[in-house]
Length: 252
Image 1 (cartoon, rainbow, N blue to C red):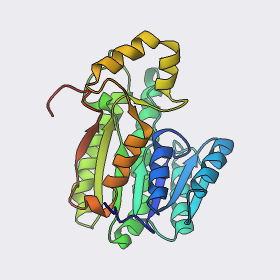
Image 2: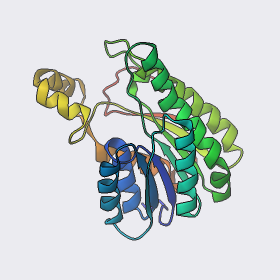
Image 3: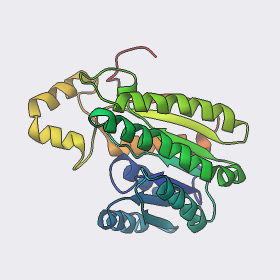
Image 4: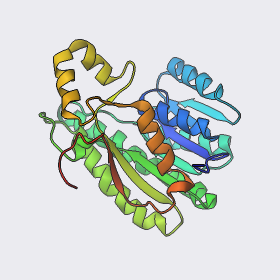
């Protein structure tokens, strides 16, 4: 299937590693230009070079702490200018919870408010695109309890509600908005890679809880993102999709 992404212009928050980087790689493989950001300049440059080597098109990278309202707005504006417009916005970055009131504030600021700020800046360009798409990367922590108290799941749940509202409002302006909730996903150097090394028995237990007997991969999540932001998914809007291989056993 041709996803229709050749020449598309995509912005990804936190795209230097993890799911954001795999999404950027898949979009680049489909012929899109991308803009990514991160706090670490060295890691960002490594990611930019790898993405640029995939093929023709623009790869824009800028250091930014998206917890800072001015920096997320500045990155979004700079990305739109560098790419010459914008068709796709993927909000992937997360504060990953944290302890106490500070953890709650960080989670809501990064996981939710950074998306609000980026959309405010990007909306005119996405409207002008004629095929605008926004995707939030959530988590199955928003649909089930994983045995510990954390602001991470509630923040991702708020993201789901916000995505639905934006899908209803921006859909009238030609912009689709969706959210995915990945389950346990293994990536080199990622959190589940560390669990595999440090807690092998626990890791094997998680594998057994998934019908396929393994965790998901960054490539699988990246392909899902590429499809949902592409014209091939033009009739999917204001929708929440769990991408976990059946790990979540409830009916939603």
